[in-house]
Length: 170
Image 1 (cartoon, rainbow, N blue to C red):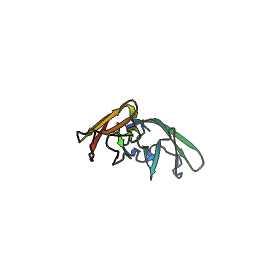
Image 2: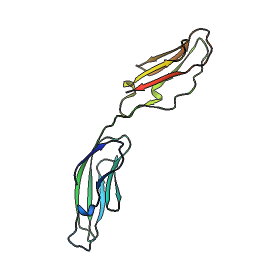
Image 3: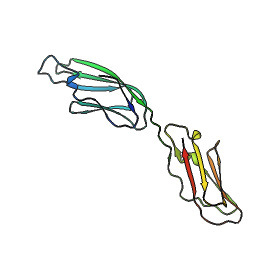
Image 4: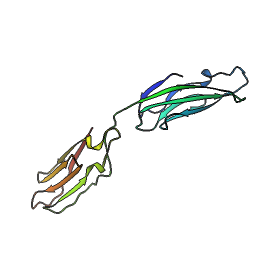
């Protein structure tokens, strides 16, 4: 079996349409049975009839070996090992759980820990770029990139509701 390489999150990959073309038993009456061992817990095998596929967990990239063992009815066996390389695919940051509304009194402020609401499987939250765009001139959004805290305040004597747009890039 040849070594394979593919990008993360790309689904199942056909390794061999018929394992009986790779493994053979001199006794034509024997039916081969196959077992599989992955050296990486994130890489999995799938067998559909005699077609053999591999896949990996979501967002996983890295290396692993897959061992395929053919057993005959007498308990004799042979095996083949091949390398699987899964290359990184940059995933976008994900914003989740961010409150739709933040309420505070005029002449005060509210603080949000933005890093609690943003996740990127490839890059540390502190290395992401954050942009906050208030839609009202009386609203001020100050972001501290060292702590991940966003402080929202309004100018004196203002009482209204206005959205703030947040963009996160890696």
